[in-house]
Each structure stands twice: as C-alpha cells, then as structure tokens.
Length: 309
Image 1 (cartoon, rainbow, N blue to C red):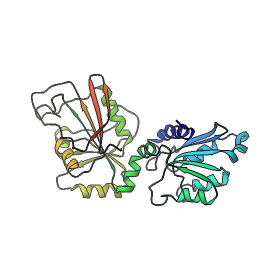
Image 2 (cartoon, one colour; image 1 turned 45 degrees about the vertical axis):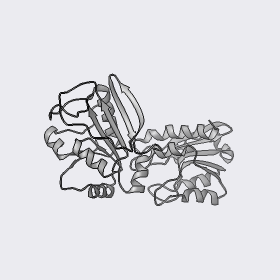
Image 3 (tube, rainbow, N blue to C red; image 1 turned 90 degrees about the horizontal axis):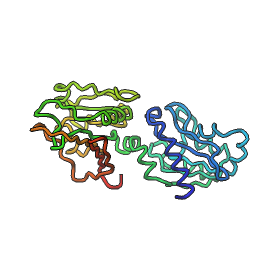
Image 4 (cartoon, rainbow, N blue to C red; image 1 turned 90 degrees about the vertical axis):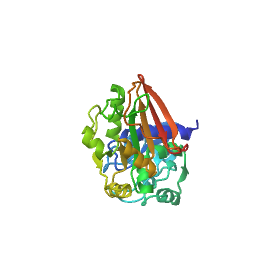
C-alpha cells in the first residue's frame, strides 16, 4: 500500500462517520499530512456545517500551522469550488498555502465536476486524482446515483425460507432473527425512504420504522397499482430522495427488476421450511454476489448489478 493509499483509507474511515448527518450532502473525509505525520483531520459532520477540509484545518494545532507550506491534504471527494451554505473549500486550501492535494474521486454534482481541481491547479497546487477511486465512489453511491441518473439509489430487500418462500401459505411470517432485524433497522436509518407494495401494506401493516437501531425513520412509501415506476422515480428525484429501500412483496420487487430499477439486492435466507406460499422474487441474471455473511444460522447475500460495483 502506497503512502497516498494509506492516508486516503483514513479519509474513507472518517467520511463514513457522516452516514446520517451529512445527507443530502456527500460523505467526505480529509487528512492533512506533513513530514509523515497527520497534523489535522476531519469529516463532514452535518449538512449546512463545515466541510471535511474546514474541519481538518481547524484541527491543526497552532504550533503545526507553519508545516502547512510543506503539507499534503488528502480528500476523499473533490473539494468544492462554489458558494453554497459554506464557502468553497478549494479557496480555503489555496489560502492555507498547502502545495499538494490528493483527491479520491471527482464530484459529479453539476456545480463542481472538476472545477475544484482546476481551481487548485490554476493556483499552482499539485493535484493527484483517483487514489482509491472506486472505494471513494462506492462510499457515496447514493449521492452519485442521484446526480447522474436522476433517481435514488435503489436497494431491493427480502427475507426467504430455505425452500424459497417469503411467507407461509399467504400468511405473514417473521423470518429474520434478532441480528438481522437489527441490521435491517440500521439500513433504514441510513437510507432516505422505504417502500412496500399496496398488497403488503394492507395485509401486514408494516411499521417500516427504526425500532432496533438509533437514527431517523425513513420516509414511508406505498406503491399503488396506478403509479408507474418512471413517475415515482421522477417524484423521488424532485423531492431530493437519494436512496430507497424496497421491502416487498414479490410483485413489487419484480416490477423494479423488470424495469431495471435496482442497484443492490439484499437477500436473507433462514433455515426454516414451509409447505408453500409466495415464491421469492427471481434474481436478475446480471446480479453478481458482492458479499455473503452469516448471522447465526441465517445467511445474508448482497448482490450488485455489475462486477465493477
């Protein structure tokens, strides 16, 4: 692992702390290194407050300020170059006199898209782009999908029995165990909205809240039969919804799969067997396994739409 990769990994660790507070802004971490030593680091804690670079510079002790003229600042996402709720971070870096900047990935947001890097280069700063690029892009997959595709990042999620059913002969069935329930509620706290189909809502009256984790409840949505998915995607985009969990049932999941509207699929399989019921949705052919974990005697598989994700 190179020095640049080592410090970029630290940026990613820091950035992930903003999973709840930074929304709808991206998660960003920043690390300032001088003479092989970290002299300041920070992350974007909360939307409307200081960006990662601002917090990293604020963490530099007065006695280390002179080191900035020989320092490198690592940032997981391109520094902003526009005035939003806070001033441009690119201007702050220039003002501080840091001679080198290492960027994980370019910001796809229309008001940035390379402008921050160009502003730094125009000021004579050495800029390296693309260190751990895929990891940096993956961290902000919700933000990237929203701005590039004008729709939320979509997670399809269901639990099934060992013999492939999502209920017990049409009756609601608790399939998850304590650990996987907690994981499901953690996921809810980290995403903007959650959706079920009309039939599931009428039959099961799911709460779709965060009860076994800490954090905000996602926006609750019910898909009615008269609402086409393209219209729903446009509505969610217009309302700033960057991520969506789809929790069922089978018809709803398969409508998203048929429309190609999914980025991630999470399937929990329990060791229980039922005599019959609603079959689990058919996984799309292009789905590839990204992760497989066991929680007790339950298995959770995470699939993505392409091997590159």
